[in-house]
Length: 105
Image 1 (cartoon, rainbow, N blue to C red):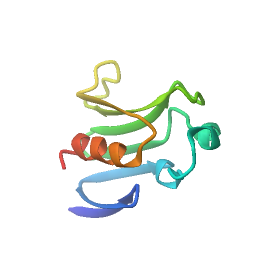
Image 2: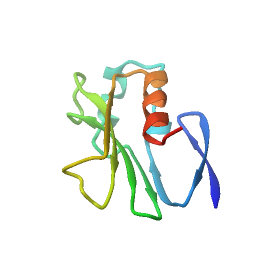
Image 3: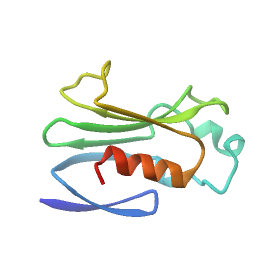
């Protein structure tokens, strides 16, 4: 069954979502990285599907202005070998495009 989720100001209609943790949508991308750096950690977003697949977004290295977003798709609990891995700078449009790709959208 599809459910609607508002992520980064975009509406997604996703099937079989078990849970979602979303701190990334509350980020203010109109501010500079230095204004948001105290919120940029490894645990910003996690979408879990009923088949065990996880879409995860974090900022690496945590709390560093020189970091970047890492978007990963994890299958079978294998965090050491993501199925998909994308990187994004501090750019909301780029981040949404990479999330869309990770979700197969």
